[in-house]
Image (tube, rainbow, N blue to C red; front, side):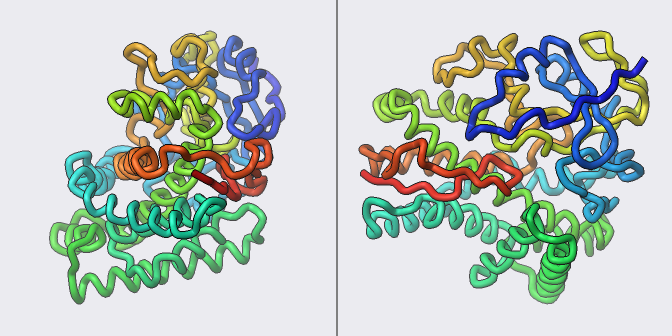
Length: 400
């Protein structure tokens, strides 16, 4: 007998904490919950169950187009078959491989010098501003936009206007009409850029994708537009907030900041642990998957075919069965398993290597240029955005 769904989320997130009640829920295995919108879904909070859900032979997303998608807000306007978000293999594999090749680790590493130049330029401006400079306004809101605009081929003078439309279309406080207008403007802008690349190709990712569409017949036109939209939409928002929460975390863990400065050789392990420990999204935000067949989870609960599951990967990343004392930030974990900060499987973040490069260069440059860095206001006075779908800091004044 299917259990009665629990109202979800159970609580609003508190800054970067993970609610301790999830530990008790994790012991129960998967539980059925009801979000404000959509049909009931099964909630996944453990690594063992996440591994089952990320088996895309058994779960997919295309089925969700036929359902009321569980979520904090109504997502009917983005139920578009050509979006990578809603595709399953083989269509998903075909399109993702093109994008993944452009964002491969080797290709991204070749961008290091160029990205470092932007990093240095932005930190020059912060240094000129002096103590009290807002790291978010002057850096986090700028670096990912400029980097992604350069990679995709969006004109520098249009990049921030383009960003503004994305901000409007993803703001939960805006009306459906306002969000739809912003999304329409975004799509029109992308279509215009595609037309320009057809007329005059450039050395950028958009030109590569247009060539694949026109000369290699690897895309339908709506798939090309949707992919360009997805790469931009997903590429700067998450990096923007990860930059700010990374710096905030290091400033509120001074022993870790000090050790990172003294032992640069632990940088890779430290960043990997920061990505695991910092919860990016608020509860109930990640998109779910739909079962392609009846699937049994670790507590013996069977998810029936065409039922959804929701992997709360920020909660999964605090699974004490996998990371001992998981709520503790620990730069010295021995052979830690793969975390879920960038999700996993076929739908893992295609731009994660670009995001990681920006965060790594930011932390390394802060250590080199601002070794005495600290918050310019008490940590408890740092405000988080209640309207954002991510754990978003509104302002982060710094001093050195």
